[in-house]
Length: 243
Image (cartoon, rainbow, N blue to C red; front, side, top):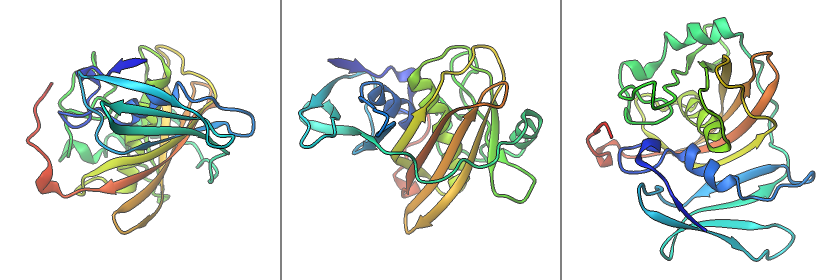
């Protein structure tokens, strides 16, 4: 089947937000009780406004694989995987999350202000505009509130994406999403306040690990993710333009 990622869902100005793109591919991964997690590896920045091919691969073993192709070039590869490695970090309250937003580092300097999820140059009527900031409890966790006005698997993956990047240290050190694994237990409730919490899971060289979780209006866990981020050379980033 063919897929086109509209420019609305950009991260950097000329490629898709990694979480949203991963969520589009993850929708087509067949998970099971033994493998409840969808894992997506981005091989290159997902292009915008271009027809891409979503191709299921014949399983080499008992694991199905889905590929997103730009012509013959592999953009993303997705499979089902066992449970995520880490426990979910304790969830902050909605009030704590909203207070953390006041400390959002992207308000001072943002590597990708066009980003659909957390960009500061986007209109809240057309983007998520999350503001994940550090909690003031010394745990290193980040949090943001989110009131979704539409729902869907790609939107949940998107909401889990950028907060993890900020918790991993993207401020002052641009990073791009390399791999994301997520389990969505339930979709969020439209027009109700939710909380996203994120935490750092370690680092090695240019690779930085994060965890994120989405909590519903009643505090119930709706989705969780683990991601690997790759630091990039800031001199290679193009000037930002609002799409």
